Image 1: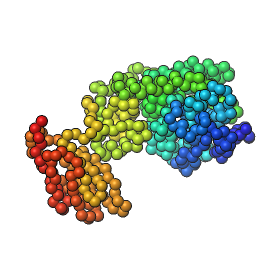
Image 2 (image 1 turned 90 degrees about the horizontal axis):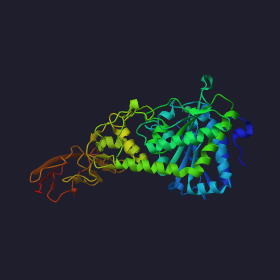
Image 3 (image 1 turned 60 degrees about the horizontal axis):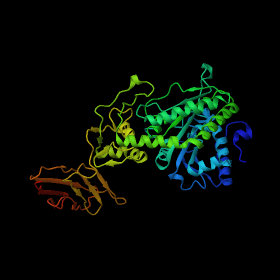
Amino acid sequence: MPQTGYETHGGWTTLEEELTFLSALASEHGHVDVSLMGYSFGGVETYLARMSYPTPQGSESKPAILLLNGVHGLIEAGNREGCFLVFRDMAESDDPDVIQFLTDHVILFIPSFNGDGIKNGTYENVANVNLNRKWWLLDMPENRMVAPLFRDYDIIWASDGHGHNGSGVNRPELEIGVPTNRNVDQAVRDATITMVEDVIFPGVQAHGYTTGYFPSGLHNAQDAKNAWGLRHVPNILIETDRTTSVQHQTELNYALYTVILSHLVDNASTFYNAKREAESRAAAETESLYLPDSRWDNPATWNTVSPTPKAYKLTASQRSTVDYHFDVLGISGTFGGVNLNQKSRQAIFLLVDPQAHEPQVSASRSATQLSDSPPDGSVVLRPEPESLVLYPEGHLDGTPQPDDAPPVFQTSPPTSVRAGQVYVYNGVVTDADGDPITVTLEEGPDWLTLTDHGDGTFTLEGTAPNE
Ligand SMILES: [Zn+2]
């Protein structure tokens, strides 16, 4: 049976011991694998272990459980140590319920999210950044490694492991935080609270430990509990007393994660359903949107956005700024912006609304939905030889040739014309390499004709038909 570093020498498991342990589990059990996810800011290899029958391959379509540890390095390593043992228990279990659960689900285990902190014994990564403030900005490589897992897997439950320093002021040995931001769907929050109060607290108390809620924390989207909650994932922040011995912390967390996994084995559908309910409610736009510091646990802070927007208009440059977030959050943009009638509704709001806590861009609210296709009268141009498409807003989408700058439209055509009116537009295209420019009309209404003047200027003209 593979042993952890703690079991071998009584101290925290090192990164080398972690890889040896997980690799040994994977070689003994076909339903376990371990893969390199990426590198920390400081270049430390970061691993993802998975477990699912008959093999984790292809498990992306299954409901997933995410166990993430080591956010604050070896300073808060009790959860990581306990999780190793529970992960091994699950791998070696011959309990039919566990096997069925692992057939229907996949467990994702990231022991050392902050590889720099595990390697160097620090709270931050080597950029001196607290990674639990970066789950919304996603500007650190560690968070960027994990964020797409929420897109690529159907994560229905997650935990983020930490340690607290509160024994001196009588904090309980185990504290749990739940999503607090008011934009997190009530089904997600309720499913989480019910598990904490009905299962985790009594289950861990039965092992002789004291429990309570985590008293502070963030209420905007920066930290894991809210950033993940806004993705409709029931999840908890775990804080165990980090001032006790390695043995005490390991045993406490072993008990805790055993309680958690035992419950999930029998009750995962509760969380699956909560996530689906939240997603469909978001798409139906039945809930208000709340300014980012509105807290579920403090109604005095509730501050609704009124009127509730139906969409946001994004310029081409705003759109390219949020492209990464749209990608990992599974957000569908439209021509000229983004509509809110989709499951990532709350996330869109907190990404682009000027009143969000840390908006990626300050987009303008729209009281009506935006069209998915270019508006009537739109003009799509494709200059040769490089492939380049211009939409009326000036959205530029092209594939530059190697070592060659594509031609650039210096002007944007008007996007609308009244029925029966003459439309004339003189445009300019430049090419930094001085290549000859040919402008042709690739797509557009029949009544519009393009005249290429051969020097980078062109005219589009026609008379718009009556309705
Ligand atoms: Zn922490």
